[in-house]
Amino acid sequence: DSGVTQTPKHLITATGQRVTLRCSPRSGDLSVYWYQQSLDQGLQFLIQYYNGEERAKGNILERFSAQQFPDLHSELNLSSLELGDSALYFCASSGGSDYNEQFFGPGTRLTVL
Amino acid sequence: AQSVAQPEDQVNVAEGNPLTVKCTYSVSGNPYLFWYVQYPNRGLQFLLKYITGDNLVKGSYGFEAEFNKSQTSFHLKKPSALVSDSALYFCAVFSGNTGKLIFGQGTTLQVKP
Image (cartoon, rainbow over all chains, first blue to last red; front, side, top):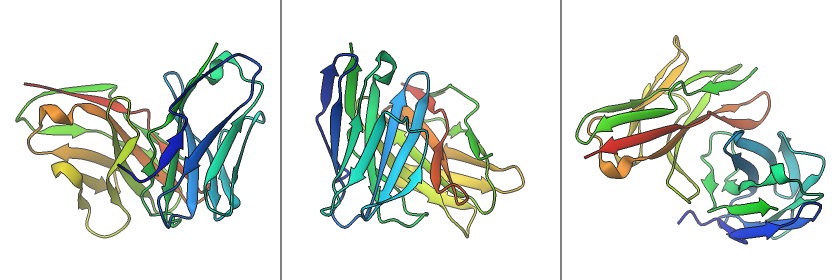
């Protein structure tokens, strides 16, 4: 158990809808990262927050947004969903230094029908 | 551009034999290198990292990796493979320029009894 929790575990929704994925980092970790894992794209970094502020941005679509709250939990919002958004979405947390390893949650499997 | 290459989609070894999973990288500046493992339907687990110092890094579950600056490689090794080592292995490099952890495409390790 990494100490990172993600909810929900599975999510099935329709095209055009909006969903919110939630992540609670390990106790004491200030950084939260979001990743998308799909068969064709592999593991793609989406975005990083550090203590409430956006720190780094990857290949995150404009339809996607994230935030980190004062209690350090984070939410990833996906809107106007398309079939191609079906993937595993992972959250990870770390102490914040560049050389700290990241601890991954179990993921949310999103299926868009 | 920063990148990580794992040239083998799959590596097959017999239990008890040594294993190597290859990784090469391209990054500006000093690399921070990581190996993660993913078991089916689970999040990624940290195995080991190279930040600085000794080129041979020892990690979890008997794995080790050798940093080779001239060949820009960071191959994962284990002297004696176990069936339970069968999983998907990811090499990753942190890019100080972009502030992102960049993952390779992953290598499936299959250890047969």
